[in-house]
Amino acid sequence: MPHPEPGQLGKRTSQPRDAGRWLGRTAVIWGALLAGTIGGGLAMPAVSMPGALGLEPLTPAAALLSVNGACAIMLAIVAANQEGGLKARFAALFALLYGLDTLLPLSEALLFENVLRIPRDLLAVAAAVGFAKALLGAATAVLLFRSCGERKGALRAVGPKLAVAAVLYVALYFAAGLSIAWQSEAVRAFYGEGRAIPSPAALIIPQLVRGLALASISAGLLGSLTGSTARRLLLTATAFGLLMALPLLLPNGAIPWSVRRVHFVELAVSNFLFGLGSTLILTAGPRRSGEARVTLDPPATSP
Image (tube, rainbow, N blue to C red):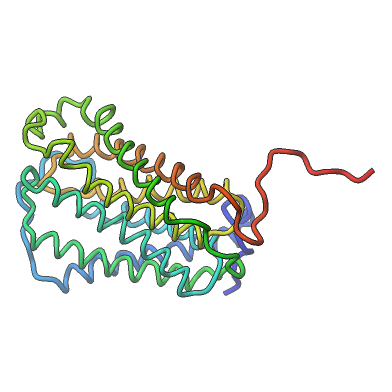
């Protein structure tokens, strides 16, 4: 099966045949994500979720199909715009999906376990299922979409920039929590008007660690993407905003939908902004070798 031209997005696959091929590959990635989720779940011991399901916008089956479908579309878009070797592209995609879809949400669940009361063995099962899902999904995506070219080189002077990006994450975390989540009466009631959650001082260090993890994922993704800074900025921000929020669409008895829907908006907004900010921070300074300079000036014309 022929591959699309390097760096092709929807506007460059306008011909019906090309669009059909892209959709076909996306459907295969969707199937791989579902196989990883369902197969991983069947391979693990059964663990009961605390609480009972309330009113939900989607049935469990519809939510499973929708969430994995959206993940498949995002993975396909990212994979179609990656450069470099197979292992490097896989590592970037796997870290993106497993980190944002599984590890970071589970780490937050541990921080708030006195409120959520999710059993540790259930969190372990979720981590294993997420691993299987990310493994199959990332591997399928990089096999279906070929590299856009040789990798032009890693981002430069990343270490200090990761620390700056981590501080940005903490700032966005608290800003979104106060301006979006805490404005909801349902959220305030769920967390006992703040009495049931750790103090801001107790949350700063864990959130800095999470910020460093997210910044590292962002750096790995940016290093694998081709195109201008603007293209990589949009892809990174969209992936972060979407993949961090999607798990909240899955029904569960620990957090009612009236609270999850507010957190969905909170996470989508804050992580989209973090994707934008981390891209600007990590790509600041000398550009990668071989990377075109991004400018708004019109091209020079010869006399």
